[in-house]
Image (cartoon, rainbow over all chains, first blue to last red; front, top):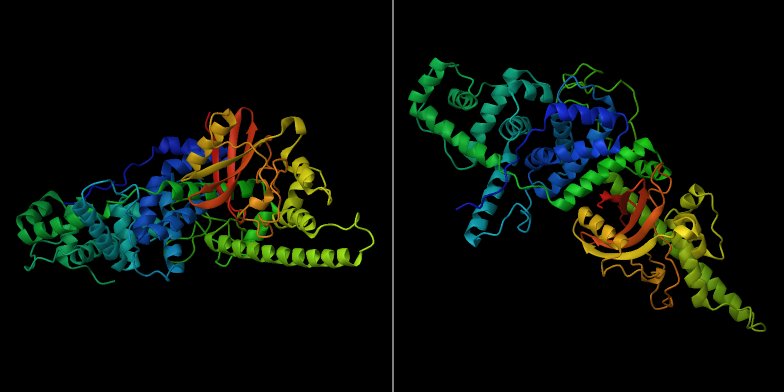
Length: 202
Length: 339
């Protein structure tokens, strides 16, 4: 049995984002505060998944939020704030990862953290094992695949948005997602089916 | 890049709904595709499970970001110091994930930065924080060394001046007084005094602190030990409770500098406890020169996530804003006090 953990959900309403961004760019500190709080959980999910452990994820989140603040005066609103913030956070998280090579393996999960509700010991053990497995599997993906898979499967972004964030063609996004998902499935203990498919290529 | 295996490509496209109706129907008739898609879906479900951010870490990230914003709006010397100690290159939030840099305004995200434009403001990146912490430690060591020399000289002079007991100063007294001076200097007290247009008197450091930091005597702030809290939000709630005068952790006493664990020059054994001395803060009031911050209404200290912090609450227009700084004078919390 696996202990339930929260799933990162929720995309902030773009219209509200626009007004908050405009106010923040005009110097409204409260608007900036609200904007950051509004997107913090979403950015945390991305940073945490890309970083592979809580400690690096927290550092990446901080760097991402600082980078957002620094870049906000240059944000012209042609893309959704959500998309732009994902781009900033992805860069920040991967930069943080490259600086933190001293910790190449995922850290132990925080058993007292809010994501670990009080359940049976077996359930906690199962959740810990899952987190370690997932963290290790995601960390084992090539960086290109990891970012594409996380942006798609965690952040629910469209291929076109991922292409924009990663600055690559949509066809490359599709290829990276497919290969990344395949590697993840193999790494997480779900081996490839033995037969070879003969269906038409889409 | 090599093309992905057809099975993975088709299964992934099936999950994302990228196939035409005919292609999808054909894919669903193939057990291998169906099984592979199920495996990918199971992995996807695991990837989507992320524990929520720790409240303290979220607060710290938010405070750091707002601190960076404050620095860009109201630059201070401390920001320059922190930036000068940065080890890593500053983040460029507009840089694409891969490939060449994006020219101004060319990215779909509209996040281009004009070429050659300097960073908007120095920020306290994590390496900068570490460097600032090291610099702060070096300053403390220097201040402690100077203090030790002064105390030794004072003792020598006192012993040589055997004919005048009235004018000889006790070494312990000299140490206590100079400890406050050293702590003030290392913590940036000069900035605070300058900001308020007040010059601390060398002979009366405590009074100078009061005048420079706390404002007029008729609007003296409260002083409190806010205890140990786990998050900035909780700290703000305690500050509110203290200001409302309803909580027992409001000791409302004049804390003695000798008790300050962040003051390496202090010695609790030598410093006589007193309830009439305002401690010299080890850090400058972060909002002392912030426009519109209003007067200081509460100053205190606490343990935030196990780390000692100094707390400052200003009030303007009915809104109270709390800022906490850690031992390196880095802002670790920035909250609106409820109520």
